[in-house]
Image (cartoon, rainbow, N blue to C red):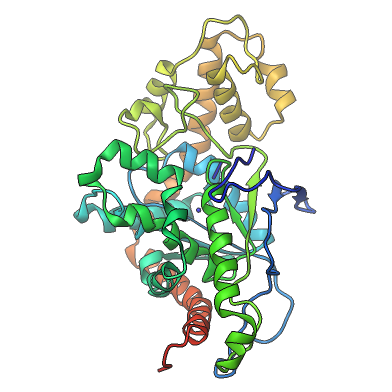
Amino acid sequence: MSRALLAHVLHRPPLLASRSGADARGLLASRIHPLRRLNCSAAEAAPGPTEEAPASTARKKRVVSGVQPTGMVHLGNYLGAIKNWVALQDLYETFFFIVDLHAITLPYDAPELSKATRSTAAIYLACGIDSSKASIFVQSHVRAHVELMWLLSSSTPIGWLNRMIQFKEKSRKAGDENVGVALLTYPVLMASDILLYQSDLVPVGEDQTQHLELTREIAERVNNLYGGRKWKKLGGRGGNLFKVPEALIPLAGARVMSLTDGLSKMSKSAASDQSRINLLDPKDVIVNKIKRCKTDSFPGLEFDNPERPECRNLFSIYQIITGKTKEEVVSECQDMNWGTFKTTLTDALIEHLQPIQARYEEIMSDPGYLDNILLEGAGKASEIADITLNNVYQAMGFLRR
């Protein structure tokens, strides 16, 4: 559920401000960008009079995110999202899910979907997501995601969806006859994914902030249309139905670029597998991909030259994989030639990924273990999601069961 924030779907002015947040123990350097708010405050939704709320205790801020089970989980998914989640789970109440419903917005291989879903869940665990700290579940196992999406769709103007950049790009590539309605409306499902859990923060990359801004707009619109006194007159608590979430953008690793084009994001959908390092790639494949990755003919190596996007990308990968500072990477590598640096990077990647791959194989060999984690995670998620969904049904005037 990642990538300078630009003009968003409603063409608002630039963001008003940003503020920094960091783990007091130094676990995670991150930046929280509050996107501009409208009239509604971000009050947490609470159960109506017929709902039983959990005990009123101070809680950690809540974070939700997910990855699609399409293609192989690659280094960009890991460094841009999953690796950061490992630190987030110690700081926040976290919900990490496999967004299988989003995986069907474009043509896909039906027999492979369930296999890919299980594999993605196993990768979460292998990378260090701890089921005792985070709720790990499959999106389709919590039916409230789809139900809330339909309710939100009734209040989402079609013009908002038509302006979504990713829809324009993907529909242009696929052609009208190959594009289903789900490709247009999946941002509403994404909003449902976030709003169901009254999320405080959503880890996103700078190229995904448009989707989060749409989520905020939908939340504020529904709060205005159905919340407050209108909801109270229908027997509800009143106030806002949804908390309006903010973006959480990591300082490093938010956007890993292709190995064949330093100006394009590393992507599962790229035609060439050479463009990415998959987390489960064997050692010889990693060696070959790094050996063949695109570089340049400039002398020496450097981080911040805009004319050297591939150099910046490979330096960034090495920095995050090794846990070194930017200054340490420059000091170590600036005088290397490309051959030497590629060997250094390859060794670091193999060393970092080997324990993940070994743990993945261990998890996949025990289906019952994985099933129990997903079942428990879906149960925890449903407890929160069902309260939100029932409140929305009430506020929108539906006859209650």
